[in-house]
Length: 192
Length: 192
Image 1 (cartoon, rainbow over the protein chains, first blue to last red):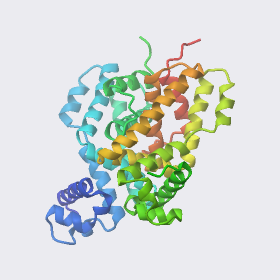
Image 2 (image 1 turned 135 degrees about the vertical axis):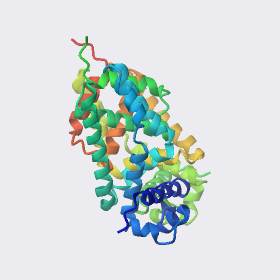
Image 3 (image 1 turned 135 degrees about the horizontal axis):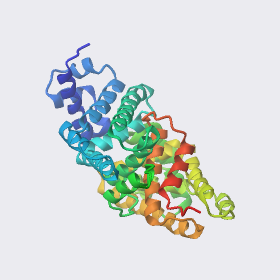
């Protein structure tokens, strides 16, 4: 099985473009080959099944949403408190809304996983790893809240992103005010 | 334009079954006719475009998620407080997770609306109405929180449902505990 990570990323990025342009029905191994400009059969060599292909797209989305190391280093110099916590979340919203197609694709893949157990295994592994990384990172920040609060924030932000990037309930809330409210209210700040 | 509400519902329910079984690519006016057992052309008479058809499915999902009047009447007899608020939310989670295909379809329609402005108009109208009804209902309950808090709870619950009904971040949280935390923390309870 070929193991060139650059080529794997190139194929996954091509797959994400096909998905955005042609939807799930247009996403085939052959279409990925064409989009990536590689010989026919290449995508099939890297992703042996449709589940593997879809799972690789989910993994690549998470990779592309990874924070910039310089930004994280900058945030890490600041004193732990509400404002810092809000800025971490703002940065998540910034990264995910900057590439709305990717965020929508990730939600669609999560739903599709309910119907495709093979994809569910792969994508579930990727998402679990992401959550565990978040929990581990959070422990280094000195900010209050633990694994449970990180899960609450995940759920809350996912729903906010769905509303921002799809048909909205029309509550006309300012995303920044919503993120601030989530941090203020979901995190057990000791009133000082 | 035909205006038989029973027939419209029958067609929409057939469309939802087609969507669950065959996905968006299988959903055509003709497939809805076949599934509903009605003459060819019927679905096209009721829903003049693909956007109208998809929009009608969204509307029908919201209708099928409507609470049972007897349950709501029972809840309305109870004193307003955290337990009652949690039970209202539990009842939402109960209705939406009992029909996971419908909940997943509604999220997919919301995402699809970002690519189809015609659907966005129809579905946006349905969702806005639902949110405004929620806000108006909430004002009758004597429970704390207003339009902003109802929006926060909408976002938070939507994200929780995505995690419950699709690939999960694997935080292994108890949904009941999550719902309780959302009510406890997102609603401004005056500590009494």
